[in-house]
Image (cartoon, rainbow, N blue to C red; front, top):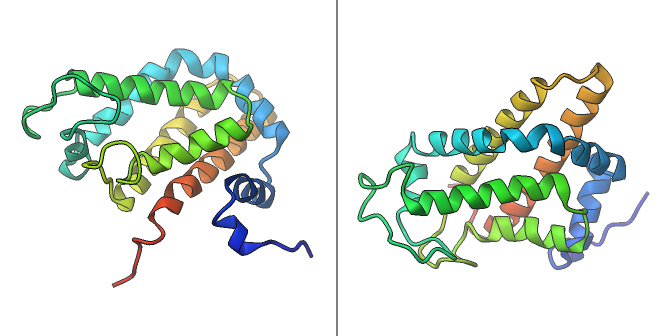
Length: 195
C-alpha cells in the first residue's frame, strides 16, 4: 500500500497533482492524446468559447460576475447587469482568456508551470487573487465546469476518429477536467460548510 502524506496534499501543489493524476490514471499517454487533439480542437475553440458565454449569460447568478472589473482588464466596465452584452469589451477580454486557456490545455507541456496555471485558474475566480470584487461561488464554478466538460465531450464526439482513439481522447480529457476541477474546488474548502 502506498503511503500518502495527506497534510502535504494541502501544501504542496505538485505533490497533490501527482497524487490525483496517479490515482485517476492520468499519465503521459493521456497528455499525448490531448496534444494530438490540438489540430482538431483549434478551429472549434471560438465556437466553444461562444457557447460557454451564451450559457453564462442565460443566468443572473453567472452573468453578474462579469459586471465588476476583471483582473487585468483596464477598459470601461458595464454600469449594471442589464447593460452588459456579449459584445462588451470586458466579455471580449474574458473570451480571449478562455480561448487561451483551452489552447494551453492542448499545447503546453504538463509540467510545474502548467500545474501552477491550472491552480491559478481556480484561485482567480475567488477573492484570493485577481479582483477583490470577484468571488464566484463554488456552485457556479461547478455549473461552469459541468457545461464545459459536456461541450468538450460533444465536440470530441463530432471528430472523425476510430473507436479506440475516440475512447482514449474522451477519457484523457475527462481525467484532465477532474484534475482541473480539484484545482478549483481546493480554493473553496474553508468556505464550504453544510447547513
